[in-house]
Amino acid sequence: MAAGTHTVTNQAPPLVEYDLFATDRALAEAVARHLPPEAAEEARAELSAFGVSAGSAQAQEWGRLANEHPPRLRTHDRYGNRIDEVEFHPAWHRLLGRAVGAGLTGAWGRPGGHVRRAAGFLLASQVEAGHGCPLSMTHAAVPALRAEPELAAVWEPLVTSRVYEQGLRPPLEKTGVLLGMGMTEKQGGSDVRANTTQARPLSAAGGGGDAGEYVLTGHKWFCSAPMSDAFLVLAQAPGGLTCFLVPRVLPDGTRNAFAIQRLKDKLGNRSNASAEVEFDGSTWARRVGEEGRGVHTIIGMVAATRLDCVLGSAALMRQAVAQAVHHASYRRAFGGLLVDKPLMRNVLADLALESEAATVLGMRLAAAYDAQEARDPRERALLRIAVPVAKYWVTKRCTPVVAEALECLGGNGYVEESGLPRLLRESPLNSLWEGAGNVQALDVLRALQREPAALDAFLTEVGRARGADHRLDRATRDLLTELADLEGIEARARRLAERMARVLQGALLVRWAPAEVADAFCASRLGGDWGAAFGTLPHTLDLGAVVERARPEA
Image 1: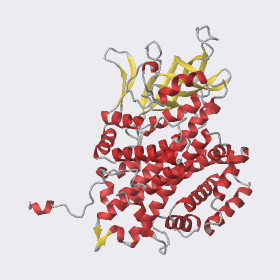
Image 2: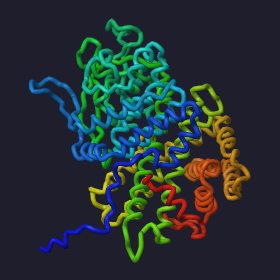
Image 3: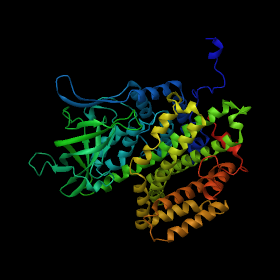
Image 4: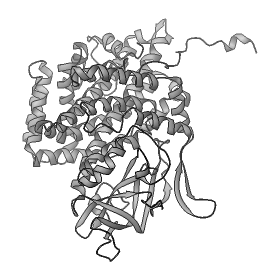
């Protein structure tokens, strides 16, 4: 065979060895916007260093290996002792250790901590999304732990540590721990009040425990991050559904009764373990919060993980768009670069709009968390309604964005080596986790009906852009009309959540994005000049500037 047939031409170079943070203009601008000036410079330096690490060939290789060598369950040791351990490829531990070391479990109580942590989470999730699960669960556990101050005093420093220690040992012998969650059961799913797991107080049964000690009996259908040091779970106590902390290893070094029945064989998220677990009636647990207040106790954790679903989807979209723009900037076809072809430019610009809108919204909500910790009631009210709105819409947009970006690479995008198939398999996940679409849409209705301050905060946020774009103003008026009509509201909940999300995204982009981005978003998403597929933006817009802004190269 002639050597000339193996000459490689007209292929894009690998998108490696670049700073994921500095080249993501929407993200870098959001960090600068939401942090006080005295903190912004330090944050930029930290995030840029993390962005360089995340954009390295080494990190990308770790992501590939972690997914090609998924976790394995070891139920017993060689002697027949039950151990219930999950083994991971070393690449998984390297990714997780790097992320914990970057502070991705330690936002609470740190000035600007949620904005900084959200930006880092968005970067880490672009490299490999699976290790985001234990990061998210561990970070989000803090509000629930604070319902029991004595527990929080012990566990919060371990949860927010920047040290990752793999392996199961008594938690107090470690300098950093990971937490998971076990809420759903096979008979109930999202309806956690249908849980049947039982919690029996040790003190009432003569077991010698204090008032906060219980033993659990039950089966959790989905347990996230089963290799963690402890789990927050819901169970039926004598006083009703209650939240509990279940450690894997007890203080005396013995293993708690925590039987991992099997690992789930999932569509995507292959590097991360999700499991079914069983509590056999001797599983020791510590109550968190009051009996009967389990949902109230754990809801802060749920809200924080829902925001991470938004950020995780924004990360997948950003990486998919970056790959598509990068490919089109090097690939030649029909006499020129793909990126210069009007129709491809339209597709890329349309994808870039969706990506930037997701990033700007997710980072605004992270800033609201920082303000909430500073006891701003309006920001707390905004989070109550904007988190389920964003969770519903941004996670829904992820799969079509990734699929279209994959198509931009043609056959090159369809093969595993491109990395796009892994992004595509991952893309539906965040819409499913922490309450699927209907759950989020109904939660929006619940906030509207029960918490008037939430709608007021939402409209105040949108109103800050009033008068800046006539299409946004008209969409806001239409939304108010829909909110005033309560007939058939439950059946219209998805439509309402979508409208609220697009109006909120439009308002944020009008305030903060370049004019060409805001104009294109409002013309298409709010003004109605848009088709049913990507690449149908009005041709009169400045699409070249939108695409250039999304370019991942420095």
